[in-house]
Amino acid sequence: MISSRRLVFVFSAVLLAIAMVACGSSSGTPTAVPVSDPNEIITRSANGMAAVQTVHFDVAISGSLKAQALGSSGSGLGLTGPIRLDGATVSGDVDVQKRAFHLTASMPTLMGLSADLILVDGYQYTKNSLAGDKYTKSKASMLLPLASSAPGATLDISGTVNSLKSSLDAAGVRATLVGREKANGRDAYRLSVIIPKDLINQQVGALSGDAAGSISIDTVTLDYWVYVDSLYPAKMVLKANSATAGNLTFTVTLTKYNEPVAVKVPADSEIEATQ
Image (cartoon, rainbow, N blue to C red):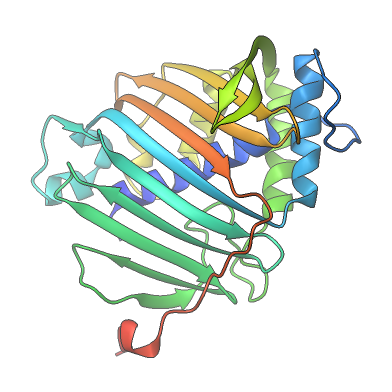
């Protein structure tokens, strides 16, 4: 699995987790009563995620990534200069109760790369268009911060939430209520969230591989939408500028809360035979 795909997977997972927890912590549940305090909106939004069983997410990526930020993977593929990522997408379904998820990625401007990742029952199944049309099977690893190597504990959302919540509190994350507008066709609060670049760099620096070590974010802006009726996270747009990595925009949408999700193990015929 090449580092560029790992970077997109992990950074997208980090953004999704940040969208889930944002900042602050207190007891509470989602409510339809109008709320004007931005920190209360985000706190209730974070706490309400504890009751979520399933969710669908979509990540759209645009901008450019410098080839040197991919480390040896970029040079090995003969990539040079800025790499346009417009049209890149990552989508997935998460089943919290069953500790499983299915994620697909597509980067049409990067050699037409597509990828698929399934985590279920303590194992991960991965495939990408550069390696063939079959999955490789292995025990769940720390490829993503939401994964655990222990069977039956492949999706440790609570641990990730608690860890990020502590980091966000310590970093002094602040939010401003911009107003109300539509998000995914529903009424939503829109907030502007200030996340110190040091916090983002800590998360990016936690990635494994030689690519992560060369990346440092210079500026970052974040807009965050929360559904008015449920206070669940609805959407976020994060713009990151970096002299070492390039300029990227991530748009994350969260929909289909608590709707049925089926994360299935691939058929034996779809899995590459072990040597």
